[in-house]
Image (cartoon, rainbow, N blue to C red; front, side):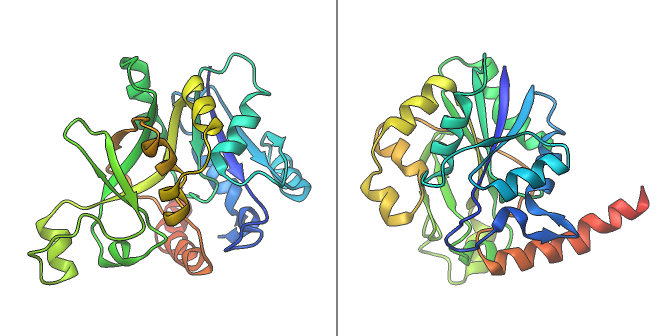
Amino acid sequence: MIVGIIPARFASTRLMGKPLASIGGKPMIQHTYENSLKSKLLNKVVVAVDDEKVAQVIKDFGGTAIMTSKDISTGSDRIAIAAKQIEDVRIIVNIQGDEPFIHGEMIDQAIEPLLFDLSVQVTTLAKRIESIDDLKLPSITKIVFDYQNYAMYFSRSPIPFVRDARTNLERITKFDIYKHIGLYAFRKEALVKFTSLEPTDLEKAEKLEQLRMLENGMKIKVVETEYESLAVDTQEDLERARNYYARYIKPKLKKK
């Protein structure tokens, strides 16, 4: 069984109550959940929560919630604990709760390499950066990967540094620079291994848990996606998400 698990932490350090933040009159977690259901490859979608208020909201809109401890520090640890409560799961997709506009096709793009290549243990997504804001914002993680599409490094800083470019506009127009879309698909064994490892130096420095995998020799297959996404990590990100919804999502809903 292929299961999508959305970790939702109420006590976010940078945006308290983030799963319940309203975007267009709906809590953010509901947007993420409903968009995840559009995947054609997921057999089940659940939300791993740390707060009864969030669990109740999820139940109210018809979703499935699994309670986990407030003391869990990372989303991957939270989904690993939730996955233990689900029978017959073999592939687990970590769908970030703060990606309210995730496309079902993006989830399927992450799953597909695991279906066709048994050597692939973990996958994630990347999209070419097209705006200077995306390049500059520390809340948008950048990624570099090799010719076989395996991740080499993740950073909150713009990478790679394009030395010959004189401006940021030159950097993104003359060189392919990618942002990381915070979605992962794991074989169950890979998730168990990852979450058994201790946090690493680079992970602590960048505050990016995926660096723990790279520092321990785990390979992450990167799938390039054409779909846009918008992660909500700060109040500024939340305002960007609300503006995006008002400008792009709401007009489409009115036409239906």
